[in-house]
Length: 329
Ligand SMILES: [Zn+2]
Image (cartoon, rainbow, N blue to C red; front, side, top):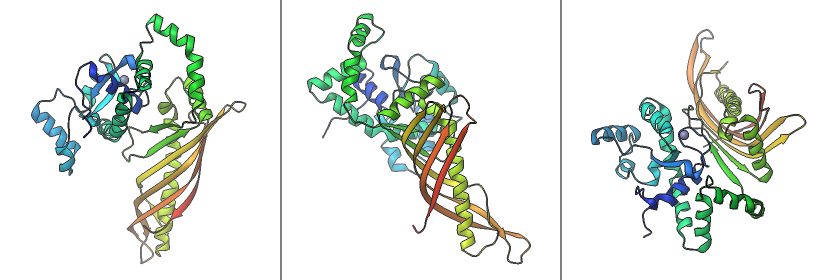
Protein backbone atom coordinates (compact mmCIF):
# COMPACT_ATOMS: atom_id res chain seq x y z
CA UNK A 1 0.00 0.00 0.00
CA UNK A 2 1.30 3.44 -0.80
CA UNK A 3 2.02 5.64 2.16
CA UNK A 4 -0.69 8.00 3.35
CA UNK A 5 -0.35 11.69 2.69
CA UNK A 6 -1.02 13.74 5.80
CA UNK A 7 -0.30 17.17 7.23
CA UNK A 8 2.44 16.82 9.84
CA UNK A 9 3.23 20.40 10.88
CA UNK A 10 6.90 19.78 10.07
CA UNK A 11 9.25 20.61 7.21
CA UNK A 12 8.00 17.40 5.57
CA UNK A 13 4.92 19.37 4.51
CA UNK A 14 6.94 21.30 1.92
CA UNK A 15 5.83 19.12 -0.99
CA UNK A 16 2.25 18.96 0.32
CA UNK A 17 2.14 22.77 0.41
CA UNK A 18 3.40 22.92 -3.17
CA UNK A 19 0.88 20.30 -4.32
CA UNK A 20 -2.01 22.17 -2.67
CA UNK A 21 -0.93 25.39 -4.35
CA UNK A 22 -0.83 23.64 -7.73
CA UNK A 23 -4.28 22.13 -7.25
CA UNK A 24 -5.75 25.54 -6.39
CA UNK A 25 -4.09 27.22 -9.38
CA UNK A 26 -1.64 29.28 -7.30
CA UNK A 27 -4.38 31.18 -5.50
CA UNK A 28 -5.45 31.49 -1.87
CA UNK A 29 -8.48 29.26 -1.42
CA UNK A 30 -10.18 31.79 0.81
CA UNK A 31 -9.70 35.16 -0.96
CA UNK A 32 -8.86 33.84 -4.47
CA UNK A 33 -5.87 36.18 -4.72
CA UNK A 34 -2.75 34.96 -6.55
CA UNK A 35 -0.29 33.33 -4.20
CA UNK A 36 3.41 32.47 -4.39
CA UNK A 37 4.83 29.42 -2.69
CA UNK A 38 6.73 31.42 -0.10
CA UNK A 39 3.64 33.39 0.93
CA UNK A 40 1.55 30.27 1.42
CA UNK A 41 0.47 28.42 4.54
CA UNK A 42 -1.49 25.20 4.73
CA UNK A 43 -4.94 25.76 6.21
CA UNK A 44 -7.19 23.15 7.75
CA UNK A 45 -10.56 23.83 6.13
CA UNK A 46 -12.34 22.37 9.16
CA UNK A 47 -10.06 23.87 11.81
CA UNK A 48 -7.98 21.78 14.17
CA UNK A 49 -8.74 24.19 16.98
CA UNK A 50 -12.37 23.10 17.40
CA UNK A 51 -13.42 21.47 20.65
CA UNK A 52 -14.72 17.90 20.23
CA UNK A 53 -18.38 18.90 20.54
CA UNK A 54 -17.93 21.83 18.13
CA UNK A 55 -16.23 19.51 15.64
CA UNK A 56 -19.07 17.00 15.99
CA UNK A 57 -21.65 19.64 15.33
CA UNK A 58 -19.81 20.93 12.28
CA UNK A 59 -19.33 17.47 10.79
CA UNK A 60 -23.02 16.68 11.38
CA UNK A 61 -23.79 19.74 9.36
CA UNK A 62 -21.29 19.14 6.55
CA UNK A 63 -22.06 15.45 6.09
CA UNK A 64 -25.84 15.54 6.40
CA UNK A 65 -27.09 12.10 5.40
CA UNK A 66 -23.62 10.76 4.55
CA UNK A 67 -22.53 8.76 7.60
CA UNK A 68 -19.94 6.72 5.71
CA UNK A 69 -18.15 9.76 4.35
CA UNK A 70 -18.33 11.31 7.77
CA UNK A 71 -16.71 8.30 9.38
CA UNK A 72 -13.81 8.56 6.93
CA UNK A 73 -13.17 12.23 7.64
CA UNK A 74 -9.57 12.94 8.69
CA UNK A 75 -8.64 16.39 9.80
CA UNK A 76 -5.04 16.17 8.46
CA UNK A 77 -5.89 14.52 5.13
CA UNK A 78 -5.52 16.45 1.83
CA UNK A 79 -9.32 16.60 1.52
CA UNK A 80 -9.36 18.96 4.53
CA UNK A 81 -6.35 21.07 3.49
CA UNK A 82 -5.97 24.14 1.29
CA UNK A 83 -3.45 26.89 0.55
CA UNK A 84 -4.11 30.19 2.33
CA UNK A 85 -2.33 33.58 2.46
CA UNK A 86 0.44 33.45 5.07
CA UNK A 87 -0.08 35.79 7.99
CA UNK A 88 -3.44 35.91 9.62
CA UNK A 89 -5.67 38.03 7.37
CA UNK A 90 -7.60 35.31 5.53
CA UNK A 91 -7.47 32.96 8.46
CA UNK A 92 -9.00 35.57 10.74
CA UNK A 93 -11.72 36.44 8.27
CA UNK A 94 -12.48 32.76 7.77
CA UNK A 95 -12.74 32.23 11.54
CA UNK A 96 -15.27 35.00 11.85
CA UNK A 97 -17.42 34.07 8.90
CA UNK A 98 -17.21 30.35 8.51
CA UNK A 99 -20.23 29.38 10.54
CA UNK A 100 -22.52 31.96 9.04
CA UNK A 101 -21.91 31.65 5.32
CA UNK A 102 -22.52 29.09 2.60
CA UNK A 103 -19.09 30.09 1.32
CA UNK A 104 -17.45 27.82 3.87
CA UNK A 105 -19.38 24.79 2.68
CA UNK A 106 -18.43 25.50 -0.94
CA UNK A 107 -14.75 25.69 0.01
CA UNK A 108 -15.05 22.49 1.99
CA UNK A 109 -16.55 20.63 -0.97
CA UNK A 110 -13.97 22.11 -3.31
CA UNK A 111 -11.12 20.87 -1.11
CA UNK A 112 -12.63 17.39 -1.14
CA UNK A 113 -12.88 17.46 -4.92
CA UNK A 114 -9.26 18.53 -5.29
CA UNK A 115 -7.81 15.92 -2.92
CA UNK A 116 -7.06 13.30 -5.62
CA UNK A 117 -5.16 15.90 -7.68
CA UNK A 118 -3.21 16.95 -4.59
CA UNK A 119 -2.24 13.37 -3.81
CA UNK A 120 -1.22 12.70 -7.40
CA UNK A 121 0.93 15.80 -7.36
CA UNK A 122 2.62 14.87 -4.06
CA UNK A 123 3.43 11.41 -5.42
CA UNK A 124 4.94 12.79 -8.61
CA UNK A 125 7.12 15.26 -6.66
CA UNK A 126 8.23 12.46 -4.35
CA UNK A 127 9.18 10.08 -7.14
CA UNK A 128 12.87 9.80 -6.53
CA UNK A 129 14.24 11.11 -9.78
CA UNK A 130 16.75 13.92 -10.15
CA UNK A 131 14.23 15.87 -12.21
CA UNK A 132 11.42 15.71 -9.65
CA UNK A 133 13.85 16.91 -6.97
CA UNK A 134 15.03 19.74 -9.22
CA UNK A 135 11.44 20.75 -10.02
CA UNK A 136 10.61 20.99 -6.33
CA UNK A 137 13.71 23.16 -5.83
CA UNK A 138 12.70 25.46 -8.69
CA UNK A 139 9.05 25.72 -7.65
CA UNK A 140 9.76 26.41 -3.99
CA UNK A 141 12.81 28.69 -4.38
CA UNK A 142 12.63 31.95 -2.45
CA UNK A 143 12.38 34.60 -5.15
CA UNK A 144 12.80 37.39 -2.59
CA UNK A 145 16.34 36.20 -2.08
CA UNK A 146 18.62 38.34 -4.22
CA UNK A 147 20.96 35.63 -5.45
CA UNK A 148 18.10 33.31 -6.23
CA UNK A 149 16.16 35.91 -8.16
CA UNK A 150 19.30 36.86 -10.12
CA UNK A 151 19.80 33.25 -11.09
CA UNK A 152 16.15 32.92 -12.13
CA UNK A 153 16.23 36.12 -14.17
CA UNK A 154 19.40 35.01 -15.91
CA UNK A 155 17.77 31.77 -17.04
CA UNK A 156 14.14 32.83 -17.29
CA UNK A 157 14.15 32.86 -21.09
CA UNK A 158 15.50 29.31 -21.17
CA UNK A 159 12.88 28.07 -18.71
CA UNK A 160 10.18 29.78 -20.69
CA UNK A 161 11.44 28.37 -24.01
CA UNK A 162 11.45 24.84 -22.60
CA UNK A 163 7.94 25.11 -21.18
CA UNK A 164 6.65 26.44 -24.48
CA UNK A 165 7.77 23.26 -26.20
CA UNK A 166 5.04 21.48 -24.31
CA UNK A 167 1.64 21.35 -25.87
CA UNK A 168 -0.09 21.39 -22.53
CA UNK A 169 -3.53 22.68 -21.72
CA UNK A 170 -4.01 24.77 -18.65
CA UNK A 171 -7.12 23.92 -16.75
CA UNK A 172 -8.94 26.31 -14.47
CA UNK A 173 -12.09 25.62 -12.55
CA UNK A 174 -14.08 28.70 -11.74
CA UNK A 175 -16.56 28.41 -8.93
CA UNK A 176 -18.91 31.16 -7.95
CA UNK A 177 -18.90 31.06 -4.14
CA UNK A 178 -22.30 32.73 -3.99
CA UNK A 179 -23.97 30.34 -6.38
CA UNK A 180 -25.98 27.76 -4.48
CA UNK A 181 -26.37 25.51 -7.51
CA UNK A 182 -22.70 24.60 -7.92
CA UNK A 183 -22.55 25.43 -11.59
CA UNK A 184 -19.18 24.61 -13.04
CA UNK A 185 -16.93 26.32 -15.51
CA UNK A 186 -13.76 24.68 -16.69
CA UNK A 187 -11.32 26.60 -18.84
CA UNK A 188 -8.98 24.56 -20.98
CA UNK A 189 -6.62 26.86 -22.79
CA UNK A 190 -3.96 26.63 -25.45
CA UNK A 191 -0.94 28.88 -25.49
CA UNK A 192 -2.74 31.83 -27.04
CA UNK A 193 -5.53 31.41 -24.50
CA UNK A 194 -3.03 31.42 -21.66
CA UNK A 195 -1.48 34.62 -23.00
CA UNK A 196 -4.96 36.13 -23.10
CA UNK A 197 -5.41 35.21 -19.42
CA UNK A 198 -2.28 37.22 -18.67
CA UNK A 199 -3.63 40.16 -20.68
CA UNK A 200 -6.94 40.06 -18.79
CA UNK A 201 -5.18 39.89 -15.44
CA UNK A 202 -2.92 42.81 -16.34
CA UNK A 203 -5.72 45.01 -17.69
CA UNK A 204 -8.20 44.26 -14.92
CA UNK A 205 -5.83 43.99 -11.99
CA UNK A 206 -7.76 40.87 -10.90
CA UNK A 207 -7.07 37.17 -11.09
CA UNK A 208 -8.78 35.41 -13.98
CA UNK A 209 -11.48 33.96 -11.69
CA UNK A 210 -12.56 37.32 -10.43
CA UNK A 211 -12.22 39.04 -13.80
CA UNK A 212 -14.45 36.47 -15.49
CA UNK A 213 -17.03 36.15 -12.71
CA UNK A 214 -19.49 38.87 -13.89
CA UNK A 215 -19.19 37.66 -17.50
CA UNK A 216 -19.91 34.11 -16.46
CA UNK A 217 -22.90 35.27 -14.43
CA UNK A 218 -24.27 36.84 -17.60
CA UNK A 219 -23.69 33.61 -19.50
CA UNK A 220 -25.39 31.57 -16.78
CA UNK A 221 -28.36 33.96 -16.90
CA UNK A 222 -28.69 33.43 -20.64
CA UNK A 223 -28.45 29.65 -20.33
CA UNK A 224 -30.96 29.68 -17.48
CA UNK A 225 -33.53 31.60 -19.51
CA UNK A 226 -33.11 29.09 -22.35
CA UNK A 227 -33.64 26.38 -19.77
CA UNK A 228 -36.81 28.10 -18.54
CA UNK A 229 -38.11 28.31 -22.12
CA UNK A 230 -37.36 24.63 -22.67
CA UNK A 231 -39.20 23.73 -19.47
CA UNK A 232 -42.21 25.76 -20.61
CA UNK A 233 -42.02 24.05 -24.00
CA UNK A 234 -42.00 20.60 -22.42
CA UNK A 235 -45.06 21.49 -20.34
CA UNK A 236 -46.81 22.83 -23.44
CA UNK A 237 -45.99 19.56 -25.23
CA UNK A 238 -47.89 17.78 -22.47
CA UNK A 239 -51.00 19.73 -23.52
CA UNK A 240 -51.00 22.62 -21.04
CA UNK A 241 -51.63 26.15 -22.17
CA UNK A 242 -49.73 29.38 -21.56
CA UNK A 243 -46.98 27.89 -19.39
CA UNK A 244 -44.87 30.28 -17.35
CA UNK A 245 -41.92 28.85 -15.45
CA UNK A 246 -41.07 30.09 -11.98
CA UNK A 247 -37.48 30.16 -10.76
CA UNK A 248 -35.43 27.32 -12.23
CA UNK A 249 -33.36 24.99 -10.07
CA UNK A 250 -30.69 22.79 -11.60
CA UNK A 251 -27.11 22.80 -12.72
CA UNK A 252 -25.02 24.05 -15.60
CA UNK A 253 -21.66 22.68 -16.68
CA UNK A 254 -19.66 24.93 -18.96
CA UNK A 255 -16.41 24.02 -20.68
CA UNK A 256 -14.59 26.87 -22.36
CA UNK A 257 -11.82 25.94 -24.73
CA UNK A 258 -11.01 29.17 -26.49
CA UNK A 259 -10.18 32.62 -25.15
CA UNK A 260 -9.09 35.38 -27.49
CA UNK A 261 -8.39 39.11 -27.51
CA UNK A 262 -9.33 41.30 -30.46
CA UNK A 263 -7.01 44.19 -29.82
CA UNK A 264 -8.44 46.62 -32.35
CA UNK A 265 -11.96 46.23 -30.98
CA UNK A 266 -10.69 45.87 -27.38
CA UNK A 267 -13.00 42.88 -27.08
CA UNK A 268 -12.42 39.49 -25.53
CA UNK A 269 -14.17 36.34 -26.65
CA UNK A 270 -14.71 33.19 -24.62
CA UNK A 271 -16.09 30.19 -26.49
CA UNK A 272 -17.12 26.73 -25.40
CA UNK A 273 -19.85 24.20 -24.80
CA UNK A 274 -22.36 23.69 -22.01
CA UNK A 275 -24.78 21.17 -20.63
CA UNK A 276 -27.71 22.26 -18.48
CA UNK A 277 -30.55 20.58 -16.70
CA UNK A 278 -33.19 21.85 -14.36
CA UNK A 279 -36.75 21.88 -13.18
CA UNK A 280 -39.29 24.46 -12.14
CA UNK A 281 -42.81 24.96 -11.00
CA UNK A 282 -44.76 26.08 -14.07
CA UNK A 283 -47.96 28.11 -14.02
CA UNK A 284 -50.47 27.04 -16.67
CA UNK A 285 -53.96 28.07 -17.68
CA UNK A 286 -56.50 26.07 -15.67
CA UNK A 287 -58.83 23.49 -17.22
CA UNK A 288 -61.80 25.79 -16.90
CA UNK A 289 -59.94 28.36 -18.98
CA UNK A 290 -59.86 30.99 -16.24
CA UNK A 291 -57.71 30.30 -13.16
CA UNK A 292 -54.08 29.18 -13.05
CA UNK A 293 -52.80 25.73 -12.09
CA UNK A 294 -49.27 24.73 -11.27
CA UNK A 295 -47.43 21.73 -12.66
CA UNK A 296 -43.84 20.52 -12.44
CA UNK A 297 -41.66 20.77 -15.54
CA UNK A 298 -38.11 19.82 -16.38
CA UNK A 299 -35.71 19.98 -19.30
CA UNK A 300 -32.17 19.25 -20.36
CA UNK A 301 -30.11 20.78 -23.11
CA UNK A 302 -26.65 21.18 -24.59
CA UNK A 303 -25.08 23.74 -26.87
CA UNK A 304 -22.26 26.10 -27.69
CA UNK A 305 -21.72 29.48 -26.11
CA UNK A 306 -19.94 32.66 -27.03
CA UNK A 307 -19.28 35.48 -24.60
CA UNK A 308 -18.00 38.82 -25.88
CA UNK A 309 -16.79 41.33 -23.33
CA UNK A 310 -14.58 44.31 -22.74
CA UNK A 311 -12.49 44.54 -19.64
CA UNK A 312 -13.13 48.10 -18.46
CA UNK A 313 -16.92 47.88 -18.49
CA UNK A 314 -18.69 44.92 -16.87
CA UNK A 315 -21.99 45.83 -18.48
CA UNK A 316 -20.42 45.55 -21.92
CA UNK A 317 -20.90 41.78 -21.98
CA UNK A 318 -22.95 39.81 -24.48
CA UNK A 319 -23.61 36.09 -24.08
CA UNK A 320 -24.92 34.02 -26.99
CA UNK A 321 -25.95 30.39 -26.74
CA UNK A 322 -27.42 27.89 -29.14
CA UNK A 323 -29.68 25.56 -27.25
CA UNK A 324 -30.43 22.01 -28.27
CA UNK A 325 -32.98 20.22 -26.14
CA UNK A 326 -32.20 16.72 -24.97
CA UNK A 327 -35.05 14.33 -24.50
CA UNK A 328 -35.28 11.13 -22.53
CA UNK A 329 -33.19 10.26 -19.52
ZN1 LIG B 1 -6.09 34.92 1.09
